[in-house]
Image (spheres, rainbow, N blue to C red):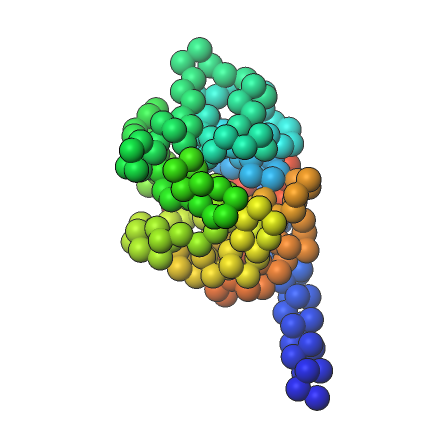
Length: 240
């Protein structure tokens, strides 16, 4: 009887999570307009960020479409081939490429300002990713909106200590359970970091996005904090 009740509860939570995926995805789609920062999820761990001032930032280019808008900045969390295909990106002559080796020097995680935004490196590591070769990125936009792209990682000390103090607005967590942590550990990370919105990415090897993994992540996250962005969707982001 106990096992039956547990199954029913878990099944109900999964159904609710799937509904949340559909609702959240619709609510956060980009509506045409100007003066708003927006984020295109290309799939896997790849994003194109366009700030309210028109600064274009690509993060871990590899998957999907939408690399035609000329880049001001390209961020690469580490040098695995599914994160570092900068050749996909149309680049301005002044484009700046920042890799893990540029942002993690002699054990020091660096912070820089470029084109009016602040970019700070954070820890990223697990059994498949060396701590000395990988970073996450905390990006602070012109209006103070703060995004955290965790890179390829599992739970880190920064997630427990430094990141919660930063009051992050949007946090993006890998959760494939193969090369990175699974959805359960990713949700645990989300509870530590306490971002306003927690977003699952890098959900399944060889896929742009796995809806089931996203739904499970949403169901495990602190209530009201999960956000699902599907590949090809562009979301308005703001400090709120």
